Amino acid sequence: MGMDVPRTGAKKKKQVKKILYIVLLVAVIGSVTYGVSRLKPAAPAVEGNTLYKGTVTRGTFTREVRGLGTLVPEEVRYVPALNAGRVEKRFLQQGATVKADTVLVEMSNPQLQQALQDAESQFRGAEANLSTVKAQIGRQVIDQQASLFQVRSDYKKAKMQYEVNADLGKKGLKSELDVKLSEIAATDLENRVKIEEQRLAAIQEEVKARISAEDEHVRQLKEAVDLKRREVESLKVRAGIDGVLQLLQVEVGQQITVGQNIARVADPSRLKAELRINETQTRDVAIGQPVKVDTRNGIINGSVSRIDASAQNGTIGVDVTLEGEMPKGARSDMSVDGTIELQKLENVLYVSRPVHGQDNATIGLFKLAPDGRSATRVQVRLGVSSVSSIEILDGLKEGDIVILSDTSQWDNNPEIRLT
Image (cartoon, rainbow, N blue to C red; front, top):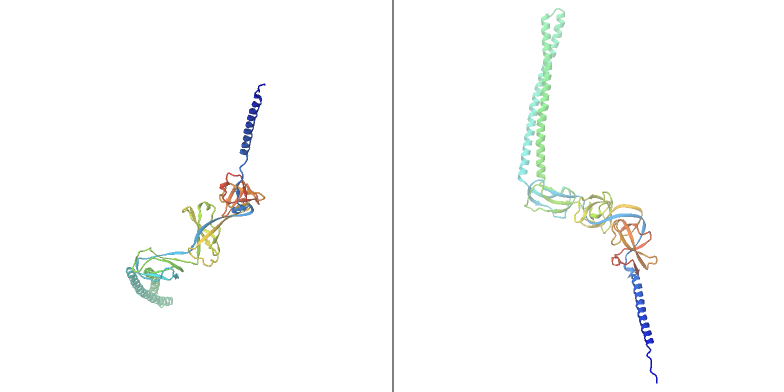
């Protein structure tokens, strides 16, 4: 009976084959792993209806800035006390409609009232003195005129006597001495006439000067009376303008000092808008630019009339003068929304403003594919912005549709799928 010989060769072949299978399996797994690692990550799926989209448009792009504000009276008058006094009467309450001459408060000031009486007394005395001076000077003028009249009369007689004597002297009926004496008398009277005329002229000039001085004195005293009367009259504090009494801040019995504010009156029919604009957006705001003011009851057209020189809490105040009739319900202190038109750019690309779109920035936006089922991230260079739109300088063309919503959660994805 023969012995079995071990089949060692067959066993070795099985081991080799097993090792080859393992090596081959490892190689396959490594290849698959490498291939998978080279695959792009799957595009995330996003519900399209939840995204805000915009279409790139070419045309006229209106740059605007917007700010909140309030309607305020264009004319507000703070009524000060022109003189010190004690409040005796208070006639109205806040909110009352007033005219310019409506008395709000009546005060008393004994010193002013006494000063008025003293001024009136001095004025009356000066007027009486002026009348006396005019009477006195008038008599001097009359007396001088009478003297001049008498001298002229005497001169005429002496001249006639000289002419008669000269004629008789030629006929030998009067001596040469008589003729000469009558000539001298006429000449003397002629000179006296000239002197008296000069004296009358001097007196008349003196009269003018004295009366002018007295008139000026009376005029000054009358002005003093008028001033004191106005000071006393100012104790009746008036509104100064037609409008509504917004504030009356004194009480009966209160002692008021000069310059102290007594009341505030505003004209409610003439309103303006005071807007607050973010200081970063006011660089191009200028006087005269058109503004549309939304009162929630209607739009009022206006124009920029004043710009604050400095910012407060990150905003700058802009006053808007309003034009045309106010919408119904427009009143002082009403909240409004104002839009200022900065400029119009013709033939430019623009789109509704993305969430993170800022002036002159380059941002990534998802542009929709033609079929609208996916969107690819593209780099877009922005220009100047408006309230709700922004200029496109590069990266998009007319008709492109982009996602304007916040897409920061997909910043690392070059593409998204819309479902």
